[in-house]
Image (cartoon, rainbow, N blue to C red; front, side, top):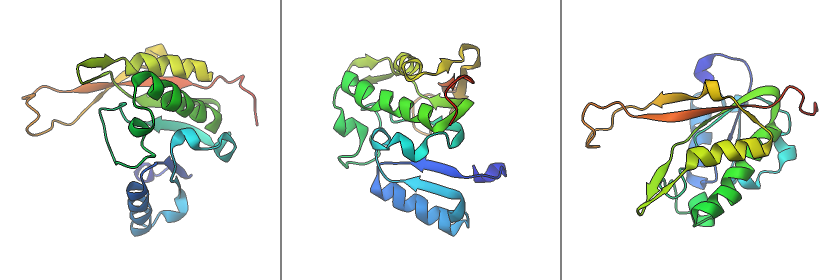
Length: 179
């Protein structure tokens, strides 16, 4: 956000205390603490009224269910919601509803997410995200779905292959209630 040069404010949500403290320190060290609002709680617990209608754009790359463990705190979605269905209903859907509430009408939400395999079971995170986005009130911008090219990871065993993940685009309808 800061590198874009766009005037405005960055609002970030992270449930990890350690990550939150690090982000606050980074914002202060880089001189933009006054341009960020960092919320240290699970996204699904943030009251919608805190963010309602404040955002022009949203981007998230949520944890991929139990595939990514960023911390061991009880605020982490994989800890709170141990099954795929619990994670979808308890974390993913409320997170998409929060993004919908936070956005101004006509605005876009971009979600970077991919299906994952955990202990032999494949979880359809991309499909779940589309469904949760539409359940939240978004219009899925099918023609806008792109693939995010990932940097090659040394030692990943993938040779020179380029790895990509979906970027799903959702639009809050222009006809949504104006605040």
